[in-house]
Length: 251
Image (tube, rainbow, N blue to C red):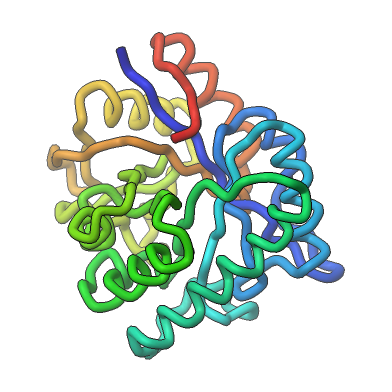
């Protein structure tokens, strides 16, 4: 029997700027990664998104990133492991306040954008994130790129980890995500995305952008909430998972 979590990055609107279709997408997912005000989001958006997620019985997680609103957290930053620890604790705490105010429970933590990708390759940054999660609440689940250093560091410490795969991204031969600056980084076709997801779950394989087959583990599938086709992707992938007798459930 196959089982998987379906997560989406959301709560990334801020001020007068609207990003994504959070309320609509929430009906198709099981976990929400909510921005904590650094790469996106603001207190009012965090409050609203937490409330909506809890009402839909969707697991709530902190989506922590670099303090880079202009770059949407997708620009690399020269930052020390200590600073990574500090910003991770800070953002988890900010979202936890809203979750607690609604009588809910925080389920997980997922780094965003460049912080996510840098931690996937760096033991030092991964260790800082893991330490922050562990010290805030060792029961929180850490989402990380499947097979990455972030997942491995979490396993070393003994916290719960979830290997994350992506429906709308392509992979390199090393199992990392193809950089967004490259033309083939994103998957825009719903059929192609669905096929990739089913293969990753059932066969534990993914075809890289260069055509090679690589091993992968899929505990949770990510759909980017800011993507142009996010809502359509969420609906299609959920339907395909059900058609393939794959149970969709939060971790």
